[in-house]
Image 1 (cartoon, rainbow, N blue to C red):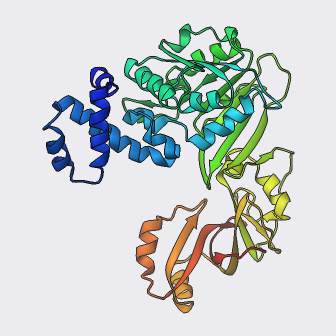
Image 2 (cartoon, rainbow, N blue to C red; image 1 turned 90 degrees about the vertical axis):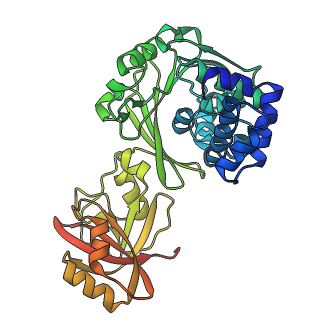
Image 3 (spheres, helix red, strand yellow; image 1 turned 30 degrees about the vertical axis):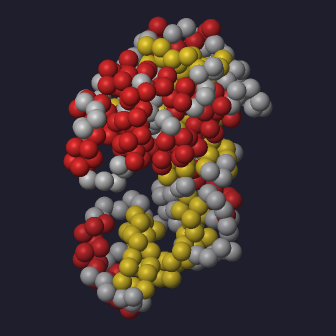
Length: 396
């Protein structure tokens, strides 16, 4: 879909084509295209069918709003999930205790997932992107959701923006190049030095980055927040106030519940394997808050280098999944197979940490056939490769 085709999609004729494409959703693609070609040209048919498919995919991120919004494939992939964007906007909006102000400049706006949440939180947003098609899509989204009075979108390079003229700088650098996804901030677009220059000239900044960002790239004095949605780590946000003397802070947040955990300096003790194993949420692990989670459940580490917590008492917490250990044995395919067969386990969930075992191959080699289910955790216990046969623990 090019800019001309998208522009036509916004006309009354284009919207009729889009509505007809929506009604054909689920039909054979060739049959749907053939039917639409009776009334519309090939470019408009392609744009309408593409947009309908993207809206269907976008429901997972944007819910009911997806039916009104517009997307590009790349823009949808990089767009922030609405729940995560809303959480961040609550921290930036005018009514927040830590509000940075109402005027926000979004220098890598994409299709607008973040500025839509910011506008709904009461912010006035100036948004820029370098791609004219993406800007047209973002502008259409602001209009479609009734937020055009709070958002302006234009084509511009992030480096030309003057963040000092706004209360908050928000940046979501592109993390995908010609070779696919990149994990190196220096390969972001705009590159990390450009982003940091913008931050240095801002009053306050929030940067959306990949969850695996190396710690050495986190600006001094920033708060790094890792966000998990329904147990899956989605992103990290770096909150920066240039010139502030605060120490670098770490935070983990769970959505949709809104639970937050911050660093207290807790250090998990090391001790023997207990009756339960706790698997901390990925956001807590990324934020190096395993010690804090261990403190919450009164647990310890069965191996000082591995983020599995063990304990003797069942403690409910949103910060960790709990498993009851029914047998622990040194890792051996033969012994593990025999133990699972003895327990009539035919359906097994395999988890691993600090193990080189190929899970798919192990599953095939186990050749299980029972009618019960179980969980196998492959890890180290006091530096020894181990297999823990468990089942999910019921709430305490």
